[in-house]
Image (tube, rainbow, N blue to C red; front, top):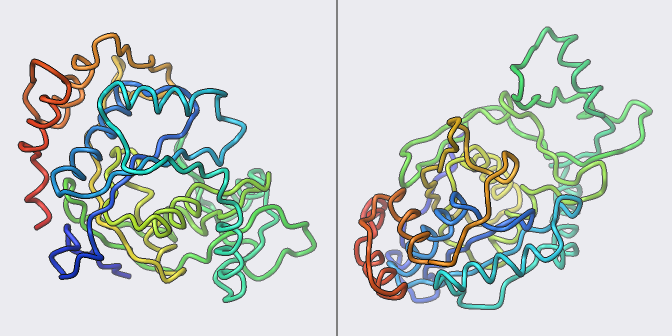
Length: 307
């Protein structure tokens, strides 16, 4: 299956109603670190380079992992770096009714179904099929409940993932493809703990906010084909995607909150911004934060890649 990607700048299709809209969507599981600032800066620069709108969305649907005060702290960090959104931030925790409406549409059309499998059930089913996975690798769902719950109580709700490759073109990484059915299986839309899954919330909110361009870290690139399938199932537009380089820890692993990445020290915001800009291939700047940001907008290297 090939899901086409629209042109980089929707204004090229004609009409001012299709202006660029981008977003930065942090999870408030802690404050921003050096890696997350790269994604924030890149998304802001891409929007400003194309005279577009830049929004901030707080992705707080995974409530057990959210840290009190982290969302407000993140907004303060962005402001200290001169990265101001063009509208008040949106909190995903206020959007449950929209996610439920989307899920109801998928269920009504037979594109989603209730699943009664625990992680242990999935592992057992995969083992019975002779399928193994490496440590840390995601266990693909074997489709046990596709034709009914077989007497088990419903736990989660899943999307029926069609067979075949899903292809798209990333503005930095180039042509990409994944067989989601083989790699992941049917995607969870609502979790067993009744929380909304990331994939559904992101797709619904990107469409609702009119997001035309998604700029985020390369660690999220493998989410793209799942989101393309959901967009297609819900009849929603597909944004353009650009996945930025990762910042690595001393052990070579991706810098993240889970592996102890330290919050940004913003006593000198320009120093932090220069470090993030270097990851994006931008030269260091001196002077004020606004002057540095303006220079990087003018030098943004990914502008021509999608035109």
